[in-house]
Structure formats: C-alpha cells, structure tokens
Amino acid sequence: MSIIDLKSALELNKISQGTVFINDLPIVRSGKKSDFMIGNFFCRDQEAEFRIWEPSIFQTVIDNGPGIYDAEVVGNSYNDKEYLTVRSIAPSLNPELDKSSFLNSIPPILLESNLRRAKERLTGLGVTAKCWKLIDLVLNDPSLEGRFQIEGAAIRYHDNVIGGLQHHTTKMLNILAAVLENNPQLRDSADLLCFATSVHDIGKVFEYDNLEVSDFWYASHRVRGIEYLSRFKERIVDDYNEEFYRQTQAVIAGHHGEYGDRPTTVATAIIHYIDTLESQTTRLIQELEAAHDGRIYDRDWGFLEGLKLGEN
Ligand SMILES: [Fe+2]
Ligand SMILES: [Fe+2]
Image (tube, rainbow, N blue to C red; front, top):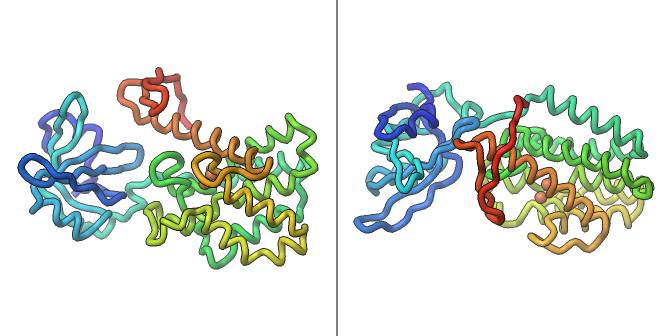
C-alpha cells in the first residue's frame, strides 16, 4: 500500500486506500447518534482533517494511539470545510514506513551552514570562544543523544519538523546578530544573550519525544530547561559568575512573555521578542504554503491576504 496523497484524497466523494499517519491522539465527540472521532492525518507538507463516525471503527485508533495506519477514506465536505471520512482503519503492516516517511525534516547540511553563518556573525559582534564552548557542552551533552538536532521546535505551530528545534534556535541567533548590530550597547552582554538564546528551548527535548508529546509534557520545557541547566551550574559559574547563570535561568523561565512567567529581566524581554518574531514568521510562511486559496486565517486578525513565496 502506498501513502495516501491527502490533498487529492479530499476531492469530493473520491475513495482512496493507502497508508496514513496520525501524529496526535484524535478527540472523540458526542454526536446525535453516537460518539465520533475527529483527528488529523499528516504527510510532509499536507494535513487533512478526518472523521470516523462509527465507534467500532475508531476504537482501533484509541487502542493503538498515534502512529501509521492503513485506511480507506472518502473525500467529504461540510460548510465548505473539506475532510476525509474514514471507512476502515488498521495499524499499518508495511515495515518499510516509519514516522520519518511522513514528517518533514530540515537537511542537516542546511542546519550546519545556518549555524556556521550565525556563529561567524556573532563572533564578529563580540561572542567569545568560551561562550561557544559552553553552548556546545550544554547542547551536545551525551545524555541528550543528539536530540537537540532532531527534535521539532513545536508539534503544531512552527518548525514542527525533524531538526526544527535547532533550526528555530539558529534563526533566532541570526536575529540576535541583527539586534547586536543595531544596538552596539548590547554587545557587552553578547555572551549572555547568545548563550541564553541557544539554550532557551533546550527543555523541548524532554517536553517532546520525536515530535510527539512526551509522557511528562505537563512540566513545561521552561521548567525542564531550568532543571537540565542545573547540571552545568558549576561550570557556568566558574566560566562566568552566578549572575550569568541566574540571568540564563530567568530567560528560560520568562521567554514566553505574557504566555508564561512574566519576564523579569531585560535579556528575557529581548529574547522573548526575538523568539516571537522568529516563530510567528515561520508559522505564517508554513500556513501560507499549506493554504489552498492563497490566504490564511489568523486567530486575532481574521483573513490575511497571501504573499508571493519562492522555493526555500
Ligand atoms: Fe519556548
Ligand atoms: Fe523558542
């Protein structure tokens, strides 16, 4: 069985058979006749909502959870919203497919060249070799098993791809370089801003597990990041001082601005703005690329007309 092309499967009344991937556990709602399931199939850039009307059919998804399934689906629509009705579904028997067949990944070569460019720019703006060494120590600790380079930056909203966490962090370092260029006064704190930006989301390797929520997701990546950083406390205090360590803790705790603990330092506020600019720009582009009619819907602002986009 081959992977179902989600975009073409959505065509009204079209029947498709093939393999699909469910990344998050779907929800069950109560309907007029009986309970039904609503969820999403993912494949690379494509995403399609699905519905399963029969409890006897969706029970297998509840029993087996997110994963790869073989299914028969029919294109459907309700109030102009397209979705797939699932007629049958069972765990896939194809051993050649795994999650990476369905998730996008950022080519490691691109990740490396982006990081190299960010490093060169920031070194020119005052970030020291001592700081890069410390960043390397924290992000590449053997206990993480290279997951900083693999994990996504989010499961849904931005950079929800393999390598997304490193990609998001590197793009933030590039924005930080622009901020340091524009504001020479900040360059005395270049090491702190660069280190704190590099580790601000490190806790995501514990919040997520291969782009799924982990068992302990509820202790957020901010809490887990602070906990993880404490392993390096002595080294950080030796290399710099306690203030550097506490300032970094404050950035990890407060980098979500009003959506988490409020920022308590200027460094936190600056990194929060960089984080927001980076993640929101990436989200807008991802949504526009997936949009059917060249415009997107924003929760706060309503419809936003699109913009011409090239290949990435
Ligand atoms: Fe975060
Ligand atoms: Fe972030």
